[in-house]
Image (cartoon, rainbow, N blue to C red; front, side, top):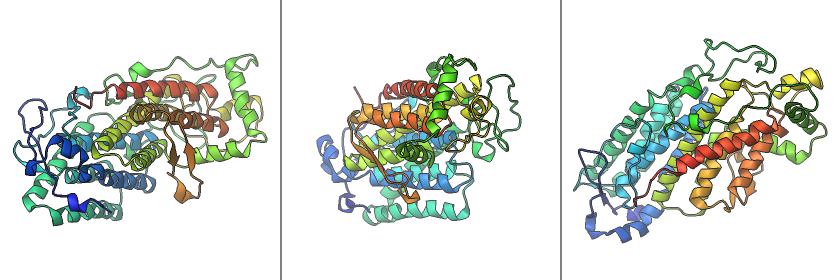
Length: 446
């Protein structure tokens, strides 16, 4: 699994400060200098550790009750990203902690100046600990899988490192994860997987307002009140109101609902395939899978990977908070209710209608945010293949621009019959603004 096993003895040194995260020590073990560090094979291939952990988290989300709910798994990826980045940043001389830039994140544990750390093991321990924390309702068998993955990497590292160095690195990674998790419990979303459909929520009633389908209850109606990773990243990214409710054929809403209905009649087979493809897996999982694929294709360094996983996690999580705030402010009805009332009383959309209001589209907001972040990191003109649901029998989809991917995601919800156009494309714009705020964080030193 790790082609760089022969380079495991490339060790890094960190500093411990009593105040806010301070400068890195300028010396490195065994006389390795900064330039050598940037070219070290261990750093180049260090993406194996985070890639394996994100793949496992995606798998767990599909097999653990309520963990595939978009905002819940997005939140998980947000905290995993912070823990990963902060567990390795002391070993990345061109980078700095983002602790002071995040919303109410307390001071984090520091490395000890003069002591050596092996940062792939710091990342391994941090991500293992964080996955255990965030998937608190997974099965005993899945917890064994989590421990097994941690032990695969730990066994490799133990065989090549002095025991004290291994333990110190593992302890630091675990300490970072524990601190990040302690911060997470006060954000409003802790253990939301226990009950994503609270009975305390009272549905507003009136013309044009959302009505759940039989057997449904409102999903995470209070999520929009959660603390975002970036302060005000939900309130400052709220879109304008949706099209006013109207049954007048000349109104915007009527025309948008008619578009959804007409799309469903003799639908283009490619549109059908796109709609089903985009409904098969929670969009945050798709985002992280795409990121892993791009990092692998570019043979990215650990520093680039840690920054990218962190940014994408922050973007998808804050986007979901922003989107759910919008949803339960406007409570816009779904196409199924409008179309059955106005056009066809027996109409059924291509894909099932989700248990939350139409405006804005969660797929669109989070994909808009992630596409913006990915374009800022790698350039929009990046060719990549989405392999996230190969195991479900779908043909992988390839794109030459992140923006094209985001646009297709928006259209897919019209094709599927569950969102009107404004929900998708205003949603993409709102998500783009969320991503802009994430990209503005200063990960690198001036």
